[in-house]
Length: 490
Image (tube, rainbow, N blue to C red):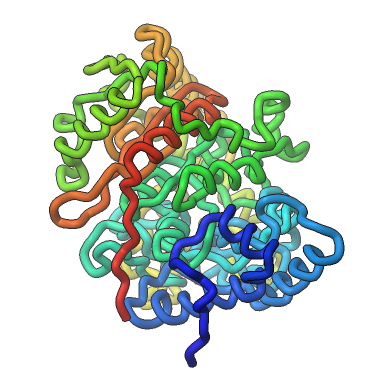
């Protein structure tokens, strides 16, 4: 089947360009949805089979048609009116799509309600196009499991070198879908590096916000302390627009209560092409010593990024020290909170589903081991023995130490010591200290290695500094225009 999409004058369109097109009648939301579904059929589920999409929303075209009619009769709700968005498969939707976190056990799970962030997307007029593949249970399944693999969905591939390149952390499907132009926007989630890593690996923009800026309600959990959703887009502008829609105080999520009065409804107000002028940026230069996967780091490209930031008027502070960066982080918090939060989630699932605890999930997987246990389930089994009650002294101590060393002896200490607006990391090596602190970061493209592999940088700040980070990242993006589309062939 061949569909004529000549009206799409270029492959990668931004929110602004699409809104102009829908206003002047050049394109409709329905045609846009059909365009992306066509690309998914040709390149994700056929051709190179990037496998980033787990399922599509069977009502997406109907929803788009309704939004087109609403545009004509009532006007536009906002910048996301008629814009397709994909969701990671651990985000609940109250429709015909399933929410499984990549597990076979939950492949028939249809949530009773939309996640809070999904309600906000629908109210903004977005078209939920479908669910994206992910690392099963957000990498809580098996230590040998490849990033981007799930028993339900198989392996997600990197569009910049699909048979060979690392695809990044558990939100890999969401990042690949944006990179390969299967959608305008997508939503991922992060506990540690699950947004930042796939953004870097797939040459897109990913924002990991302050924990509590976006409600966790309706997301299959990994932890209480570190989990957050966040946007993927091809530009800082589009990512900032999506962030403003996702952010909000939710009375049913205590983490968002501290965001009252501290979040923005429109983060695009920070888009300033001169945003680096007068900023003071601390550069973490120890990547060659700290980076465990050497082929993800490129010293020349990182130095080029630093020079660009300096050329744009920022004051650079080289070789900054972060006192706690080299400490051996204790993983007790994620171990105990994964057990507690996932067991609680499973226990509340409808009785028709086959599992209602981690123990039942382990046994279910053993019963279909040929399908479910390609990489085993040692992480699940390790957590099964932990207590369901969060009172273990190791856990409590680790939780307090995580906050102290990541905030007071980590990011906040360094920002204050050098009087910085932000810290710049190569790739995503600052993900863990940001995750432990619950602090925001934004990853974006910074060139390509000689082998064609994407490279990127991450701007990091203190709590609720999303606006500052967007300002810096946008100025860097506009000065460099590094991002290139992947060369996808059938």
